[in-house]
Length: 447
Image 1: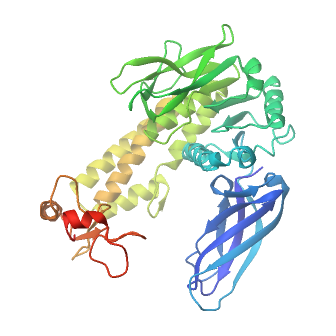
Image 2: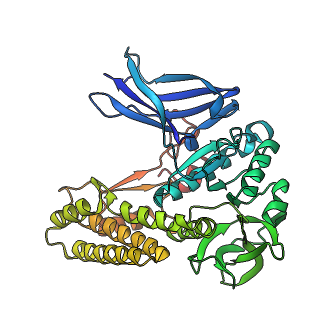
Image 3: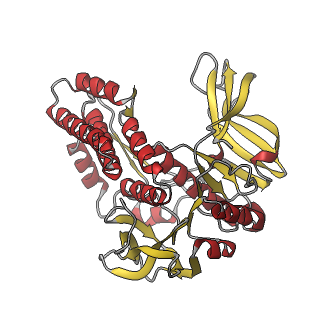
């Protein structure tokens, strides 16, 4: 039960190494993570997060890891050496378990990347809220490992193994709570009081554009949460056991009549995966779901969000950020104005915490952090002469403009350089002697 693997690392000359990879053997496969050599003259800490690892073959869970291999991928023909020490795990504890669907490696390997992506989205939101959690492979779910856990989260689990579904069912029957996204095993429908139906694709782009509360919604959820979903899962409530807590709306602000959230006594189901768009409201929505099931998480999240204010740039807390930005701004009115707004929202958030208005604490904490970041950016003094570069992905410039028009606008706004996309691995956008010349060059000319 942990977030990942950590160790101390030392390499006197990492320059010949392009990158480092960590392989953890389990069952018939490997978990693979990576890291760059730390910029340090001495020993430095390296962390490999479980939720960020890739899968090769069919591993049997982190509890079955029996071999650790660290590979240095060559970047230059020079000998070097590295050392590791104090290998162990980190991120133990907490009352939340996020289940990663590693088992899809065997049954639906094309789902591996999406399983990884949406597990990461979930961990990032909980980290942002300051809620302790661990990531557990669906191969590793046991009653013993769920002891003391209050909330299990299924972020995107297309194929839940039967044994894992049974363990979650027992967990729910003994007082545990569950949040599930997009899919819910049939085995869990009777115990949750939520019926899952068929896949519903969008009829047009913007068909499913936001999530909005029903008349019997979750306490603390936003009035509108933006989410550009391309499909959903149909779901229905069971009388006396669950209710529709939110609906899907289209991009014109009209209800689709399709449930977005079904809430029961022990489970809340969202009919698509949780995307990272509209992140402030999205975190608030997730916390409303978690707080509905485990009310004490509201208080923990409110404290965590307040504590996170000021962790930016070189600063590690609110006071150091406030003092540092004040000195850095040195009379810059825009930066100081943003800083004052950050102070106001921080103060109001602390007051609301003392009054138990936890959802408002989180809203204010997000705003305070935003204005601190704004103030920090505004307070930066440009280096003279400053190199301000604009990257253009298209070799043919900004759509609807000539290069001369685009360059004039960039120059008027302080940019001093353009980084053009001159070539790809198999095509050049100029008369190259090495790469095939893109067909568009004949029509539009050498850029």
